[in-house]
Length: 414
Image (cartoon, rainbow, N blue to C red; front, side, top):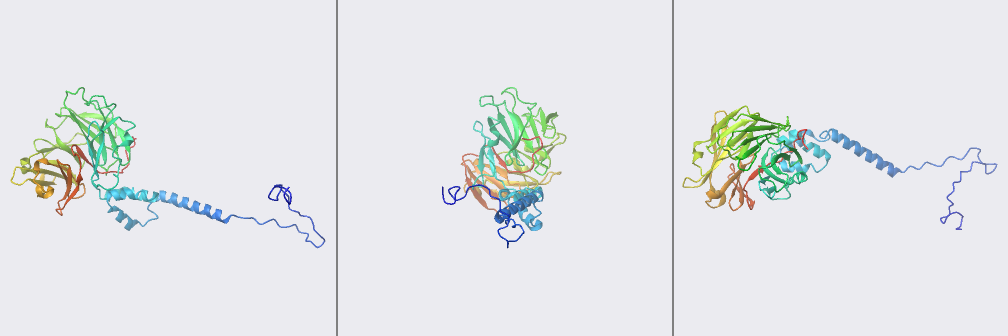
């Protein structure tokens, strides 16, 4: 046995109570005091610090901006580009809550981020116009792949994307359904069957249009009609149902992408007029475009920027091929103002009028996007007259502009 008995470290492991008897006559009659209580100071400090951090985190979650300077910080964040604002959310939970504030998001300058391409047979295709870093959203819409076999984006509006989907890659093209999703929040809602769904491929094509205002994010509307406008149906996310209404339009098939502005859907027609309808199908109207736009080689394009309706076209019926951009100054009186005119050769370095396609206008500034048939994409600033080459891509056919939205999803969404 090791010296001292017991275990190999000189102790037996048995408990011996402290002696309380007298050792000699001179010893004190009082019992010996208990040993001092040893408190692990470092451990207590860690527990206290952790508790304080938890309390601070809970306080931040309840009042995210309370511990930060309201005035200057909010004003600065309101002027930060939208893409940067979204990335600031990764800093911490308080920053996530602060940057998600509806007032800041609404005031933050939106940026034309990317384009979705309607590429049948392949699935969602994406073009990152910034050309730097990863896209702000998942371009493949992978969060929908578990539910839908084949998915094709059709239109973007206010940050939501309207898609057609098929149960199988082997079904007929007209046998599709509709889903609306938000790529930024990965939320989505499947629509019930369209009441005017085609029964066979020989019928007239059905067109669908998404109407969504991020300033009023609680609901969205999808309007659909046959190619000749003989039938019109409107889906509301508030009711979750389709309703059919009598069409107030003519049988002129729309061309180009739709524009949803001030609660009204706008569509360009081959007769060089813009037809309109509200989201309830009660107010139908028409806006004439400037007379000289009728001389263009192709139909005018329409878009919305800074709360106004814009129209632009490329005119090659003159000696010099030109791009003309107009803004609707008086909505009620259909009064247009010429915003800018520029030669195509100044934009692309050559006179390639017949091979240039206007893509979109920036929603927050006087910036227009164009591409030629070679896949060269540019942006043109109508204020500074500067041209910026974005890049070269394989195609822009069927491109729909996309701007992210982080607004709350309607309660019935996934």
